[in-house]
Amino acid sequence: MIDNKLNKIYESVQYKQLINRIRFVLISILVFVISTNITVPGVNLEVWRQFISTGGTLFSFFGLFTGGALNNFAITSLGIIPYIDAAIIMQLLIAGFPQLAALQKEYGEDGRRKINFYTKWLAIVIAILQATFATFTLNKINPGIFYDNSLINLLVVIASLVGGSTFLMYLADQINEKGIGNGSSILIFSSILFRLPRFILNSVNLAGSTLLNNIIIIGVQILFFVIFVAVVTFLSLSLRKVSIMITQRVIGGNKVVQQRSTFLPLPLLAAGVLPIIFAVALLYFPITILQAFKIDETIISSNYLLNFVYRTIVPPSLVIPSDFSFANLQVFFGTLGWNLWHSIVYATLIIMFTYFYTFIVINVDDLSDYLNKSGAVILGIKPGQDTKAFLEQTLYKLAFISGLALAFITIAPPYVMYIINWILSKITGLQELSLMGLVGYYISGSSMLIIVGVVLDIIKQMNAFLVAANPRELFKKY
Image (cartoon, rainbow, N blue to C red; front, top):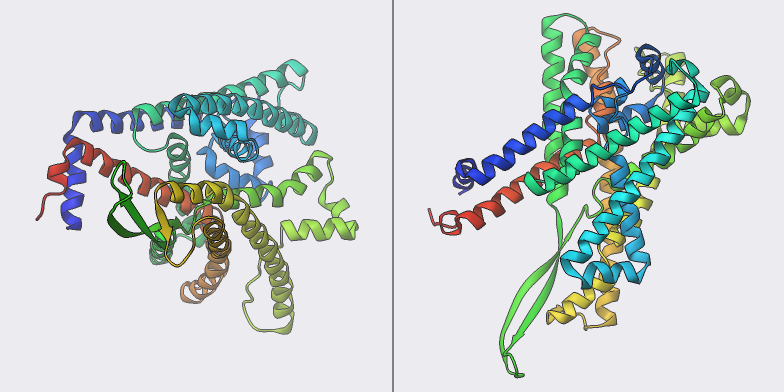
């Protein structure tokens, strides 16, 4: 049955409309890749690349979402992030202002278009603020990044960044209309996927030139990647099924003609990747402020509070002991303590944002009203306030489990790879073996959630296209 469905998906490319949509997505991705190599005028790339190489986790994390544009200081260095930020803010405004909520619910397609229009203009404002803050901050931290530090040149840099981000917003919108899948997600998906070969090659080069060692390292990476994708896919498809009973009545009468039992699906990862992005942005925000005020590590190390904050955000690299001598174990446990503390703070932020955003995505009031209007009753629960209270309790439990799951898939991989690195060092004899570039910044909870989510969404849309194009053939019995 699965093979037959896959065959139907494969055969669906014979339909002209789907071929055109897939072709448009591929062309859009090509245009996106080209845009990531168009450098902003007046930027000294050599100084810039040296600067971001010592910029730590923040540049590496957000660099994933720009497809290499950040490394090239391209016009699309802001990526699609301003639009995502605007969409999140608009969701919060809709939840807080009944007028916007009514516009979205009661005015149908026209209301949604107005919301989308407001979101785009808000995204442009956010892009202007982000580009302005980033440009002036970088000019203050390291003036050598720009050949010309005059106000006019800095305004050109800001205009280029805003224009690039606006172009990506337009490109994502065109993919939504003429392509297949969500445009913003596909651009981020492409950004992450195209950097995979670079991460693999870097980790192989670090390991040495021995063919056997390279085969072992690549094999371990592929195995870890497959296992991680399987775990994330399982979590992404996991549901909390709430049993409900739907009662259908004759129009104009009160006679019950049918009762049907089904379930209300509540996704485990309703908040998606956003809690991780929020947590990273908040966690590394103090570092951005310190850099903006030119507070270097010398000043930080002399101040106990600043040093504690800095070590919490950027813990020292975990040093795996080559032997179990007292000195090596002392260094190991010292670095392990900071890394565990960092992980606890990081996980706490992820869980907090998961709680917050889950209740934004799944509105309990709207859901209970929908069940009431549909004639649906949760089994064993009275309609009204009891239903609302039950849904709230269920979502609290679901959000906690979801937060733990997101924290696990974000924090666990580096620790697993530290252990694997130690084992591989014993097998290959290489003491300076490092796969953390791949696992720490590529095989992470955020990137895997996006990759898996985009693939599942595309498959879902292709299936929907098949149903619309030829439903009899799709549901034909084999």
